[in-house]
Length: 142
Ligand SMILES: [Fe+2]
Ligand SMILES: [Fe+2]
Image (cartoon, rainbow, N blue to C red):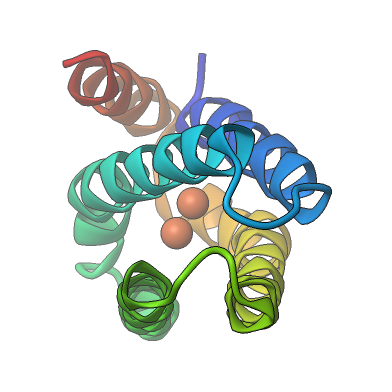
């Protein structure tokens, strides 16, 4: 497996959880469960992705800018998550803020999969693409 496939698999998990959460209402156990799952997914993914995908791409001229942009977006998502954590799930503000996070996630994943994967495809060797997938998956399994 190559790194792109490994990342895309987890992106799809995030998309599925976002979709489920958009259908939740009020302070329900379903919302609490999916929200916790999404947070865990996002956090683990961002750390492993920065380490095993962005970091090697910071070394190449063609991908350094995209990597920095990606890290900045991870921070923006962290900030929205912190806002949501402070927000009462029973209030409408929770869903308003969650929709902002959902849009940010959708935008970020689409950008990574279109623009970033294409540039990274040229910057990394075939062996690197496989090694990074192994490293990324090992870290996610922990
Ligand atoms: Fe990312
Ligand atoms: Fe990602």
